[in-house]
Image (cartoon, rainbow over all chains, first blue to last red; front, top):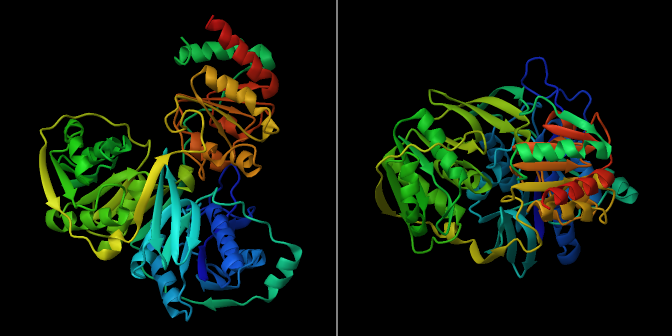
Length: 252
Length: 318
């Protein structure tokens, strides 16, 4: 089985954000980078499927040259090869990103049986690239998958949204987006990291497009709270908390 | 006219759709609602109560349960005949997904999770990034605006209108039905009250120290008819089931009371709980980032404070 996982390099944000002086981007001077959390599950699922069924696992990302770092890390986990669609580092809007991914997928000799995405990106969260890619490739898509079983060219997926679980079935080839909780992603081993250095990464430079969804600026969302009122220290503060619970109506 | 997708599960309304109807009314006096599947026709009264003057019911024998690709096709059909100025839906996983299918079919941009929408040429929106920790000012270059409304950015406000029902038959493509639903059920791995419905959530983080001490949280949650939640580190350590995770990659919650015990407040966790009405923190660290988002805090060891709180509440209940 030939599997493709699409990834996105994102800053590993802490508990607060600093913006660049022009307010167009996050100041990443003091931040590390990784991939979106759900995507770690997508790579793990791909590695497991190739271990069970044989085949190849290709990683595809659109991002700056530095995104090679994220590809190498995931290659160390067990992927076969990577494709990096290089940008100048600026954000691409969802339509442009999807078009570049589709072009790269169509240029491949391998016809991927399964294309995996994380359910959403940690940063821009546009909720659409996977759907645009599926339509362009005329493939069915199942999203937000928390358990997945692949047998005889059929994928059975359980999707959990809110309090309802739904079981879906689709024939491959298909596009599936997965959520945290699907599996426990492994860490790259030292031999894995050494092998990853030699694994091929193909660099391409897609043509940028004029964005239809155009970012103007970013701002840090205001907190609903002016900061917590400290009720006290340790168990002595419990009566004050009980009073609060009465005031807000949780206790009669 | 603004067309609002009112989402439902077998006729049971997604309440976030009422917020989307309210958001639509703030930008236009002419609001129509659309439901996908015959079961949605039952929602005409509530759509009228929230200001829609027409309810379009998309009908197809194969549409009963959630079929997002078919929803996109039905919406595209309706957009082509009604020519609305905008199509809105709730910024829920289902709302985002169905409008993404619509935007793809029409080859138009979509702005997900908007807190502000101004129609124009181009349209102007403020949308959530990083699970609403950052807000993005953006322009949408297309005649038709396709956007979802950030959950909890708008309170639902009634504005009763006389509503008419209009049924239409959807023409689907074979690909729209290639994903088949085999079955459905409740959240199997979760035993307590459902996180999304709970009025009180007692949530634990790394500071709980291990799976055993979660019994302190369970006892308090049971006493308040609430649910137990946790942070990502807790589920990735295997202390609690994944279904209890609150945060960007878990469940986003908005209870009346959220008690965060031993949770420092990574951004991805804050994203999941910041819409709670009241947040109470119990933490040994007076510098924990979560204090900036909380209403009240006790600086102390949760292993002592939680049992004392449970005792005190039992005492008030006699």
